[in-house]
Amino acid sequence: MEQLKLFFELGLTHVLDFNGYDHVLFLLVLAAPYLFSNWKKVLFLVTVFTVGHSVSLILSSYNIISINSGLVEFVIPVTIAVTALFNIFSSGKMIGNTKIGLVFFVTLFFGVIHGLGFSSYFKMIVGNTDYKFIPLIEFALGVEVAQIIVVMVVLVLATIAQNILSISKRDWVLVVSSITIGLVIPMLLSR
Image (cartoon, rainbow, N blue to C red; front, side, top):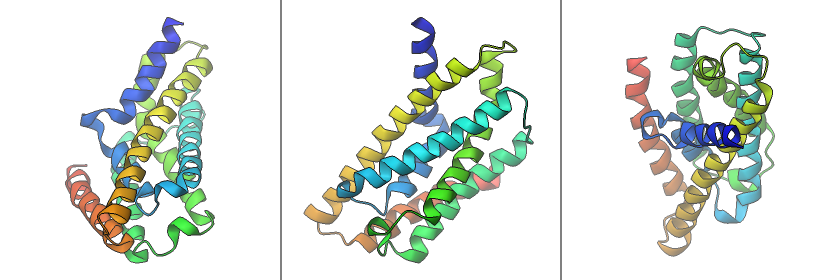
């Protein structure tokens, strides 16, 4: 039970850590085009992201794949920037009301990339033991709960901004995505 708590908390802090805010930025731009009324679609996308994240951790932990960590650390902010740019170019038009399709596959792929970014640290924590699968699942549960917290906050803010403050969906998406790009550019330059 204590180990469940350890890896679950590790998953929570992995997402909610202020020093590693890249995960939160990705979730922010992923959820930006949606309102609280679209919560099922957003939670589905969050779960897809977690699945991709977990699959890459599993594959890396069992030494099935190995990727240059420097490259992955550079590609992570690229995934955030690409998602934000997609939001800007689509200006939030109908994204929240359309079928998931391409967004599903891109989110899954970006989840794989983000999981690879954490894989070397996770391997160091788990060590060389064969007992890795259960800690991976526990970690994934923590990641999922933290992501749900983040996107629910984003959805509530989007709903307040658009329905109460009368900020247009287009403006909301443009501002959130532009601010995110502004935060990601230094990450890209430093990596």
